[in-house]
Length: 68
Image 1 (cartoon, one colour):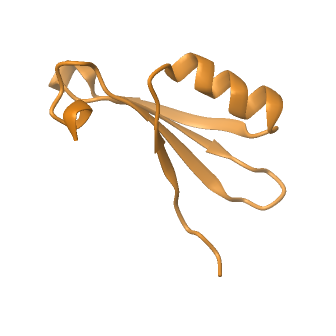
Image 2 (cartoon, helix red, strand yellow):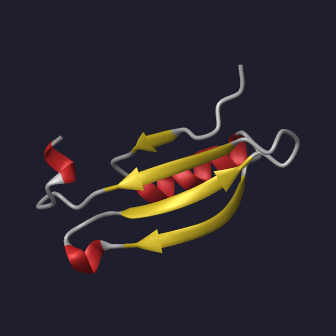
């Protein structure tokens, strides 16, 4: 079985990016910022050996997604 996509909701985006890149060796591929639309910020990471992507998602406290 191969996972095509996996996302994790985080409370401290920069700390989480640092953990996954420094400790697990994932590489940051790109970022998206939807905060101006009352949505979150996402960071796409990738394992260079396997190609497995991991998305980290952070939502501001007043966003709808934050309460889900």
